[in-house]
Structures are given as structure tokens and as C-alpha cells.
Length: 441
Image (cartoon, rainbow, N blue to C red; front, side, top):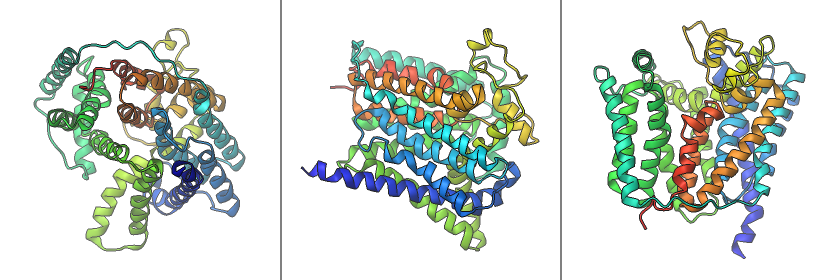
């Protein structure tokens, strides 16, 4: 009876949270993003009542229909994508002047329909595949052998440049990153190995360590991600540690309002940082706020905002890829560009050598391939992938499935669905979850 009485309150809380978060991102675009980072190719539009009205309509609408309780692991992944990808995309489309109003409506309609298509396969009953049942000790022995072999190779490759740079120092971060990329280009496999280790293997070890309260697995998972950060200074590796821990603590609690609490994790720091950016003028405070805003606001929340502007403007006068950016398809369909898509788009807007504007899967796979219908196609395809993930997760711990799909959805915020399936470890996670001996009984 208590659970039923919570249902209307849950939906109301989620809608109001979506509204607050959307308004904050809209205000942040006008007061923080464009004034601070406008040189990246942003131009703010006149914030009329009409603009705000349609923006709020499109931004909040999915919160009326998304699952309010986490029955399948991917349902939480959907909320992660909604908050960190969908709303920021809508923000960029509506508040940037380079996209005309009529086009804003078409763009955001395709985003909305495409995103809602991610829910299609929730109407289909999950299948339960036969588990592999690899013995617990044998599985972890083989898994550790593969992981440590890869890590030793990466450490050897970067042996002369491993350094833990200040995460708040942009100059040090980019200097280390560019140096790391040069080393990576000397090896045919280094890039793939780093992706597997950072997006799949170490997050998986850390997740199991938290669920089992296994200190050794927690140390290996955290230590591995820190070592990888020392190679390329990619802040996402450190962010993964914090995110996995927070999501674990969230789902280890008995509170039914898990999605609402996740909103609070994001709304509070967003509001605080925007307030300090706008109203506080104390140098030492401003320096700290600027660094934190660069990581949390610009790099985390507004990445999809920037990419929404970039790709919509870019493809007004450039050919679509027709999925030829995918390795297998480009054997049949000719890829129309010299460089990879992110570099083509990035260097079109920013005069930086090989500036890579990676975008989420709706944009990279959908919009870039066939325009607005492509966003809807990727929504349907993504729903099917989530259906497979949920089905394979039936043979394992539900909370492990939630942690792993969260990691994959964070990857989907910046790269193609096809890249996430292979290099991002999503297919690998399905394989792992189909072994019900991962967690010691």
C-alpha cells in the first residue's frame, strides 16, 4: 500500500526536477556557457517567452513518460541519458542563434521522438539466455590475467610520460593529453586497449568490489583507472570512480526515490556553481569556481549542448555519412571525409589542429548519418540494445547491471553506439552478466 501511494508523488517529483534542471541549464547557457565559452562557436539567441515556452515543453515532456521505477537496469541508464544528454541537446538547439526557430522545432521534435523510441522494447518481455556458469575462481583468474597483461603493456608504452597532473589545470591536462596521443599513435592497439580498460574492465572490477565489499577489487578498480589517467589525463577516468561509487550508494539504499535523488546530485551543484559564477566576485573563490565549472558544467553537462549546435550547423552544408563512419559499413558505403567525423566537425568550428568534437550516439550515428530521421532510427536501435542488455542481466545481480549500464550510457554521451558496443565494452558487459558466478555466492 505504501509503494502505491508513492507512485503519484514519484512522478510529480520527477517532472518538477526535470523542470528545475532544464531551467537551470537554460539560464546557464545564457549567463555562463555562451559568455565564458562562446569562442568555441556559440551565439546566444534572444531569450523570448516563446523560446522559453517551447524549450521547457520539449525538455520536460519525456519526464511524463519515462519509467519512474527501476524494474530493468537500462531504465536507470535511460534517465542518465535524459538528464546528461537529451536536456543538454535541447538546450543547445533552442538557445543558440545559429539554429533558426523553425529548425529548432524540427530538431527538437526529432530528438524527442528519437529519445522516446528508447522505451519501445520495454513493452517486450525479457528472454532469459542460458548462463555460461564459468566457475568463480577460474573466471577471475583468467580475467585478471587478461587485465594485468593489458595494463603492463600500457604502462610499458607510457613508461617515460606517466604523470598525475592537476585535474583543475587545463594547460597541464591538455599538454599531457597531446603527448599521450602521440605515444598512442605509435601503437596499433594502445587506443583500443585503453578504451577497454577504462570503459569496461576496471569499472567492472570496481563495481563488483563495491557490491561484494571486496577491498582488493576496489583497490584494483580505482588504481587501474588512476594509472590510465596518468597516461592521457582523461578526466572521465576519475569521473568514473566517483560516478560508480555514487550510483552504488544510491541503489544500495532502501529509498524508493532513487531517480529523484540522482536529480538532486546534479541540480544542487549546478545551481551553486551558476550562482557563484554570476554573483560572487572574489578572486580566490572565482578561480576555484571556474575550475569546478569547467569540469562539471562545461565538460559534463554542456558537452551535448555544444555538439548539438556544432553538428546541426555543420550538416546544413555538408554531406551526411549514411553510417559510413562505422568500420564495417564503410566497406560498402564510401565515407565522404578525410578525417574521422569528430575531427572534421571540430576543426570546422575551432582552429586547433585535430580538435576532436566527439558527440553522443543520437548525433554521431543518427543526425550525422541521415539527418533527423536518423535520430529516430538510433532511438529504436538503442532500445533493442538495451533490451538485449536487460535480458542478459537477468542471470546476474540487478545492481551490477545498473552500474554497468550507467558506465555504458556515460560512454554514449560522447561516442557512437557502435563504438560503445565494441570498444566501450557494452557487448562485453552482456557476456559478463550472462555468467551467474561472477559474484561469489
